[in-house]
Length: 487
Ligand SMILES: NC(=O)C1=CN([C@@H]2O[C@H](COP(=O)(O)OP(=O)(O)OC[C@H]3O[C@@H](n4cnc5c(N)ncnc54)[C@H](O)[C@@H]3O)[C@@H](O)[C@H]2O)C=CC1
Ligand SMILES: N/C(=C\C=C\C(=O)O)C(=O)O
Image (tube, rainbow, N blue to C red; front, side):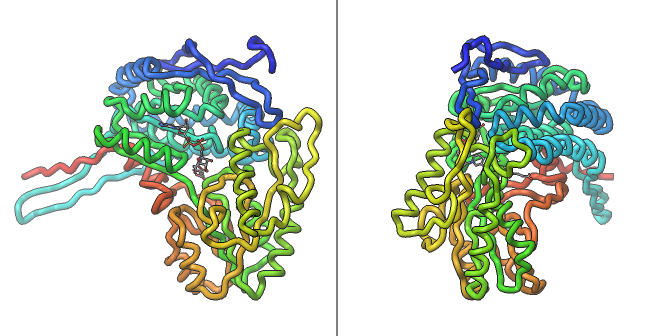
């Protein structure tokens, strides 16, 4: 382990200033297993300071016009874009993802999040209705809610943090954000740009530390009336319990056990590479990743052979290798958890066709203790196996055959989650029928993860509460009022 002096040390960002903390957590480089960074281990005291700053900043920020706030968001987007390479390098090192993904997806999308909400905030209108027979005019108006608590996970650190910060401040709220303690670096780097972008002190406060300590202090604070959370279902349950006594507004974007349904008339040339990507992108650490692949029986053998061949080409490498498709998993504990699912599948009699325990992973000596594993394909597995029911959140996918449309819809819907699905077929009628019947907040047909940020994003059942997007995020981050004028 490196000496404390060599470690990158982060500080909280409260009221426009970097503030040291009296306690720190170690943060690991997933590609080596070495501690390389110290993250503030904040608690109630830091939340109190952040609430005070956010409360003081609210009247001024919320009184600005949408145009003025929009300009600030555009400037922040420009500054992030100018730092794209530096941010991508940092994200890749902190999270374990490939530099290529950080450069082409995470950081560009973070920039886009600010540009998108800088634009969409200018285009909201409100409703108005007449009741001439009683001489009344009714209209609605929206106002920012106040101090927004934003809690984000480790898989897409800056991407998901900015997806919350941007709509919250665009609507005139002030925010206290808590990124994952496992991936705090790019949030801290963004704080360095806020003043230059023209974000007034106290509008964006970022407090680092663990969920149970600082996360719960934020969620329980009576002056924080809304919480936007992305992460796991058990944590969402805890947040819901803590928020209930205060009747807080909640937006919960949780996990998935996402099916890919592949009919015999699918274009396999497109379907196979896209389904490899949807299963293993970002090490399978995206809530939208495919983890149950249902293939119609008549093409099952052909699909399986080609899919395994394509999976073996999905190169695992050190995150800085620009030719790698997959880097390291987030942590040792997470790697062990993912591996435990594969062990369990084996004991249940499933077959592991490639990856963990079947193929050999070769890594440079410096990375032997990193949290790497090969993309793994499981078959001959029952629908009630935990690998087919629980969110693994790693590079593991199960492939099983099906006979009919009705059967596959029922099986796809048979889990507690309902976030995202893909459907592959060249029959438009079938695509419509299946998409309509799937219990899933998002259905991509003949594609995956093509995002239209205007439209609702989120899940049903245990995959969450609420939606995010232009209109949905605006509605969440504002309170609506109906006003009646008698004339
Ligand atoms: N969007 C998604 O679907 C995600 C799902 N996961 C799932 O969750 C599993 C566990 O990953 P974790 O990092 O432990 O997820 P998590 O849900 O514990 O963490 C997400 C965020 O919530 C915070 N948090 C944790 N406990 C909290 C509490 N009691 N009060 C307030 N905030 C709290 C964390 O510090 C982090 O910022 C993963 O293996 C994966 O299955 C993880 C990340 C994202
Ligand atoms: N929420 C997650 C992904 C969102 C992607 C998007 O907005 O495009 C997740 O993986 O947790």
